[in-house]
Picture 1: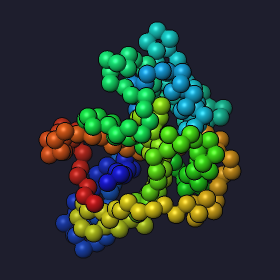
Picture 2: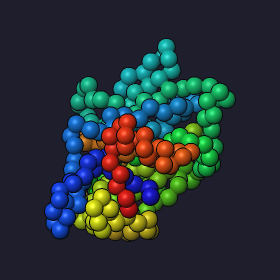
Picture 3: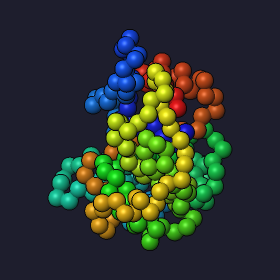
Length: 237
């Protein structure tokens, strides 16, 4: 499963299981992913990538600890909180790789997901990466029924998903806490024909971190930790 939206942090446990609304996620405005912090081998190379390809806007840069803070592109707005923090470290000591596309075998980040507020932005981003993304940074694309997603790598092989959620009214619930999700070919032609906001201008207002997908060494133990210690709910697909 490639997708798990953070729009959907809680489930309705009503006893009346015959109603469709009992199988909805309940969005909790107090629970969200504020930002993602990545280790990178070359800070400037990563800044260039995230600005030119993803469309992040430079916020603060700390020369003292080799860290930069990037935010969504919101022209004329100061004080926008950072969505992405990049820190340069010794790649030999950290295990950072500069081989995009190489499958990681250790526990850790699989990908982080950038949630766009509307489908038209995903269409514009798709056209943008078709024209500007180097092939070694491209991973793929998919339709997950609840969402449409594009996948790529950054220069350090950190996985990135850029996606939009379909409206919850279009999601299909197959049982309590169980949602229909698939990994099927993306209808590229339809996406590019969708209402677009034109040339990709960078991340639009209301862009957020939708979810983080992790590799783990023991799935039952990881599931128990995130349920018991963090308080997340298990949603099966």
